[in-house]
Image 1 (cartoon, helix red, strand yellow):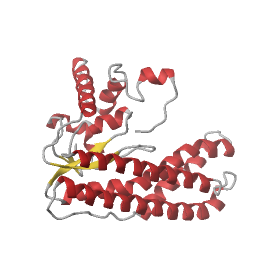
Image 2: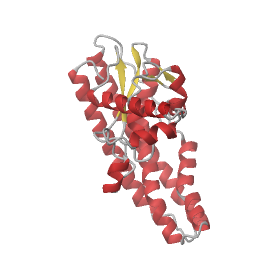
Image 3: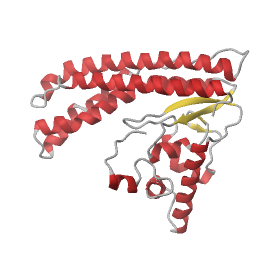
Length: 280
């Protein structure tokens, strides 16, 4: 975590600001959703897609700009007296358009092909579409922090910052410590365990994820919450070993979700009691 109290405060303020940007992006996605006619997807998709990509880019830029101001303020207190570094990521229009196509028109068509009515398919795709809008908005800030941590020689990497009640997947990634893009830095895992998480390097965030990131200067020390995540991972990994099973994502995450001691937001115990949103 941050070396200074001010740095920690800036990170939390930034996290809340990014959540607000993501929430507003979801509201915009909701407003545009009715432009896509489930009874005539092909005819309506062009106008909907164009408007949605434009909205995604505006939100991405806002998230990126907020993160740039945060990073320069954060560096001023974490590494005072040195240059401010902020690497600004570009908006990937093709990737965003592809993700929107998959979550919108193609998903609706897939559901209709499986026997759902166009109206039902449109309704079921709704939550996924809001998640896509939210994710691509917040990726502006996430991308800036990840890119900056990789170029700033003073940094040992970046850490994942979860909300107060993360899902198991996000908690597992947060437990890894500081990361450099796709390269592990001060990860708590041994080399033989790296295959479990390697494909999720680079700050992967699921739909509706509430996680942000923080550049790490100095030596990474887990917060009290991160230590709980590490402990939960270790319990699950040891249980997998005891069953003579490989430490795959499915095996470890499954046992972490079943861990009543940790009781993550998507844990089996809590899922039996209340509906759980896919939000880290």
